[in-house]
Length: 355
Image 1 (cartoon, rainbow, N blue to C red):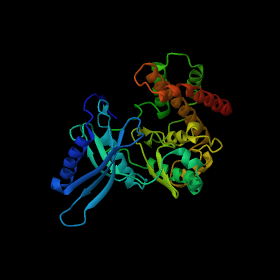
Image 2: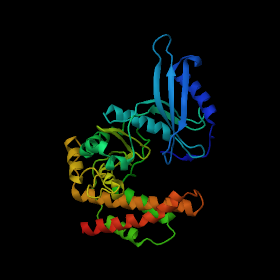
Image 3: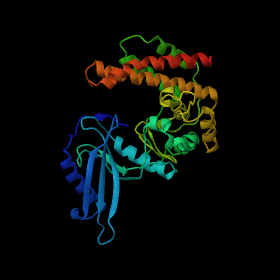
Image 4: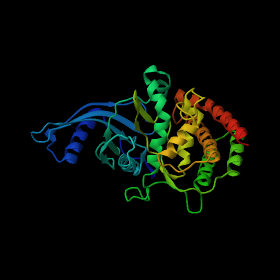
């Protein structure tokens, strides 16, 4: 999605309110006095992006004022990803057109000028995103009963998005010519693992050999969300409200998304229900295919689930290195180093069960 640019600066909340007022007035072609910006506050979450909650009211010349409850999704100053915000903005618009539940997007600033770093403004959805509440609270019992099928149906819509459309074409990562998505992902993940790991991980070496021996045949490419898992879905007591965090979207094998949702880490203790702790693999795939998704064979899903656990191990290694190298001195990152063993144990279980 573009190179990371070290530019921009973090504004104070007062500066952000002033500048955002100017930005909205320009976007809506109204006088600055017609725009009111209130309740700006930083939201928790957003590991690689900053999130702000803000309320906006626009007086449109005597008619009832437009009142918007928004979230601003912004690159952190100093870690600006060239073109990333604009691409996410277009992805959300394209997803909405296909009937995917996503926040409505309003405006996008493609450079750092308005608020110190690129951002876009989107609807603030009403609902919950914490997986453990979904999987434990009685109020969400009805949601748990329908969510696996909903997530399969939604994923079929995501994979139907035209990644060759003018607003997306050439902007999404994709396998190079001559490489399948599976080959490309193996090379990418193994290269990342070898670049950051300073201690041996024989289970990951075994997983690499296992995967290379079982690369599935080439399948039609599609738009892949890239992080389709519990924690990136908003829900209420009726079902799924929205799909969030599209920054890892790319062109690849749609089976990758199905398998990533089935990685054990996203079940949050409900290990008997492989699809995000709310349903079975079979239920997820059946709903996906009934909604128009291409058939997915069990061995293909198994391959991508093993690859997903290799990816998770790399995430844990990378985050632990960030702590050990002093880049981010947080206990959270330090603790994730211990979870490498969880991914390795799951890799052994999956590989043994599939051979």
